[in-house]
Length: 401
Image 1 (cartoon, rainbow, N blue to C red):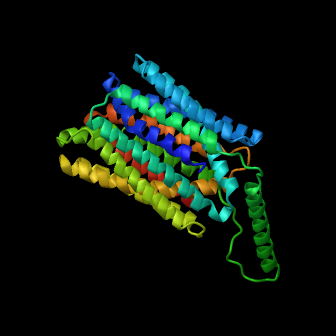
Image 2: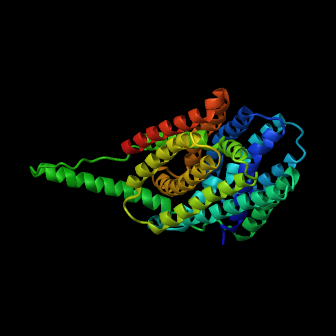
């Protein structure tokens, strides 16, 4: 039951994810303004992730920071309705991002400490799939609000209200763990396993046996670089994506609500991915799966280049299929990397996963819209190629890991 507040929180931000870029354009902003807003928010969230991750582990109070996140989001989204300019909207969105990430590290720690290591993938997948359902419903709300033309102010009120509901439900159902030891046990087990394997290799060598097996730890630096590159490519691709889909929907002569419908399908693909990741929990294929997920993401980015060469309805159709498959792959990737990060990142640095993702996301959130606008007619072609190449670099980093 403790997850129910997060469900409503994701509903609000699912609705906001497509609405906000289009809202900025309707207020006289540009693609670059969208990029500045998204990248500034992610940059400001980086020190916030460090801070909240450190504080929640230091104080061992996780519920408090979850409530700070949801209440601040509700209040600031309500203030959005009174913002007179795009510049002030960007500033206020940046402030919200610092407070919004306060729930991320506590949420990860709650899952890691409430469940044993063999079940982490299953419970991370359940959490992400459950909240992705909220995101999907938020997009459906956007679809209906766009269909009935209920207006920007009403949309922002709904986003704010959903976060207020998340605050109330979390205040009721979230509880801090009485004991915190699971991550420490996992760290000890990894150290003991490495030492035991080292003694086995040494004993075989001393006995004169031929050994082809190597003693090797995971390359944490490569893991971090791969995560940053993956986040960078994802943000380059998806930050201007609502604008691209909106343009193609207009060219095809379809209703504006189809934009939300396509992102609903993307979210549905994510739900399916979380179900698959949860069903495979505890298997030993996690690391090998990561590379394949990234390669396919690269392939689908290049498929969007093909979509640009089509006309009208065909472009929209292929883009929708690509977004469904990308949502599926992202879900599997996220579950496995979250579980691995809770293994290799020590207590007190539980916010590091969000920091690494934020670094890549901040750069990509600016670069994606900037490239799309700077290159004019070939802008989105350049966006798709850049994302595909960077996904390939992320694949190399995870291979090294």
